[in-house]
Amino acid sequence: MHVPPETEAPLAPLDLFPAPDMGAWRQMARAELGLAPDADPMPQLQFRRDGGAAPALAVPRQGDTTTFARPFAGSADFAGTWQVLSEWEPADRAALGTRLEAELVGGASGVWMVGDWSAVSEEHLAAALRRVAPELVQGAVFFAADGSAAPALLRVLAAHGARQLVCGADPVARRARLGAAAQRTRLDAELVQTAQVAWELGGAVRGLVVDASLYHEAGAGPALELGALLAALVHSLDRFGTDGARALDRVVLRLAVGQDLLEECAKLRAARGLLLRLAAQLGAPCTSPYVHAIAARRSHSLRDPAVNLLRSGSSAVAAALGGADGITARTMDGIGGGPSPLAVRAARCSQLVLRDEGHLGAVLDPLGGSYALEEATLRLARAGWQEFQTIQAAGGLWQQLESGDFRRRLAEDHVQRERNLRRLKTRLTGVSVSPAGLGATAMESTRVVPEGALREVRDAEPFERLAARVQATTPAPWVLLLSVGPASEHGPRTDFCRNLYGLAALDTVEANAEPDAASISVAVERATADRAAPLAVCLSMANTRFVPELLDAAGRLAASGHTVHLAGLPAQQEAELRARGVAGFPRAGDDAVALLEQLLDLPLGHVGGAR
Image 1 (cartoon, rainbow, N blue to C red):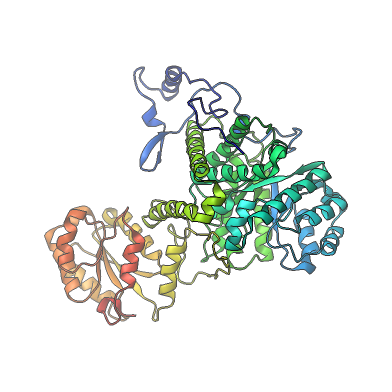
Image 2: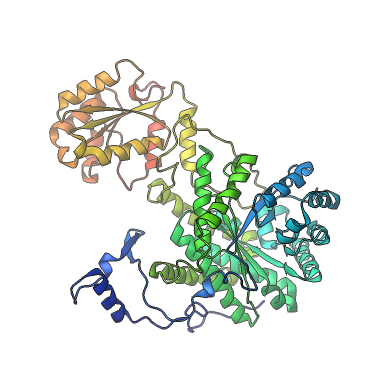
């Protein structure tokens, strides 16, 4: 399918609104804030992003903002708020009916059939559907599984009263998931065959799904994810030929949603707007795109899996506020070989609480008009369109997957994100903020990646490797955190250090010392008298305490055989202290993982590294 090149025309349909009257807006803002007539209100209305300030409140706009939002409740396309979609796996064929009944009776609006359903016969599926009350089957939406079995499964669902069906395999996403084993001709043929069955069934059936969630899980940033979404859509539309316009009008966009509320809300809105823009340039109707948002696994951790429930819940909040039509919350133990029945129920019920008790979906486009969100939406839409053009210019997404170029682009995005995670600029609760201790429950990932397939990445992996090393060490290593001076001086720095060593699940023993060399020496001797030597002694003190006497004390501790860390020391003084044996300098903004890796790499037999 031919996609027109970029032009100098406005970014329709995203640029729907005339330029705001900033003068009138500033006048209203000054009056509301009680500022002087010539004062600039913007400095008081800002939030921080990427180290800089960005305006955080709305500017006056005219026109309709529903381009990016969910349709009104009660409309012909969608009645109510978002649909709660549970993952339905075929792992236990005998329990298919029990699981389906539990989901629909428990309040789910529908199910998303995930995994390999090729071994599930039509008889198995029919038996599962017969177990459920007919009115529940009729009222639920079924997202059919991918693969050659999809047409038969669709017909069974329709025969048992299912009226809302979503089908249509995404061949590019399946290539990314299957790797070198994927055959382009076969996957393209399965896409067309499945869509034809959907059109034959008629009714409320959507016959084209574009799944960009895998690219997010493999490390893509939001712009690359949006570009890949459009490129995969164009690939599928090419398979339909003259029926492409018909397929586009019933398209389903599937995206993974992470933890950044503003960015993820903007991504969903930008995806809807970009789809409409592509449809306009292709001259094809696209009146009712459906956005299926999935809580990303990328932010989940193998350690302390209960916190994954909070992460999945926050992703669901972002998806709801971003205007998703259907939302799937991940189970808290899914990456460890689960899910358990409790995790399945918790994933479903967390959405029900947000929707039915929190009323998050009761307001159409609740964040619409926020300058921060509108600015982020336009920024991501422009960047996503540029990524789409780059992919198309290189031969399309399938070709990029075959050549490995797309994998390199994913790696670049992931490296940038991991850099911010390792420097603690991007925060992950339970991992880089309030990290789980050594006794936390840990799972093992059971995922197998086929050759040539995209590998899922997780934000917690660098920290989990550190904790695994500590957990495998006997006796358990520990760190002496020695606070020098009154707590009012060193409190925030000591808190930072406590959290820093917790990233590796290191036990931290805390002690206090007066700001003189003798007191520091005595405090270290007392804290280490009745136990194995600490892995490190970290001195935490205020900047005003970086005087020659106390820096000399740090050097003497290093000379006595201890591994010494000195928290917060200015970089210009680091070389001198390193020459005197101080091993590390915990500082905000530095690579925390590298510091801990260096600490754990100390040779056995070292006084400060005794295991």
